[in-house]
Length: 291
Picture: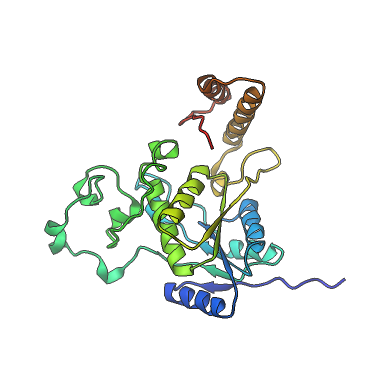
């Protein structure tokens, strides 16, 4: 039996080189799909790549941990990373990927960062964007003062749900995705439904800013025990993983209850909260929303 050779992707680290690659491919009549990731890839990411193959001639995977969506108190420094392992996983996907965009830092403008003598001329944003002022929430980008001061916000959809406890998270996501779209210039981009609010925000951003990009949503992938796959799952202890399983089980209970006629959103929320807390979990939020 003849084994098909695994495709080794072209690894691109420079923004201008990435843009030139995409434009050269498009000049050859090829369409491009982008799968944005923060690395430490798993089977959920593999499913996104497989979905991308259905919608374009070429597939680009970006691997970049985005500091713009982390506050200084969050887990940016401990976010799991295994770039060589990621490349091997991408090569193991049937059909592979054509290019991997792996920039060092999409916010580092080096000599363009403000000097101390310019500080008096800087007016802090309402949300406290100037980290040295100590007013409000700031991201890791602003804490390091790399010179970046332009942000993309989807104002209504970023509020509530995950946005309650992470007020700058979706601003950081929308901004880095905008940057990736401008650099890679894809025809299609694929996102997972696991990050549901993020997917909806990107959809609205693409519509509102007239990006000529089609957004594809891919279904949630779960491990055999039912836990949705996630790069951060590597940090879970055995006991924490058992508690995490209560989330999908609680949602399944609520779904079944709704099918059986429960129409009260308050009752459905309470069912979810009680199920998770009974299993030893701590609930950040539980909401019932119309899709």
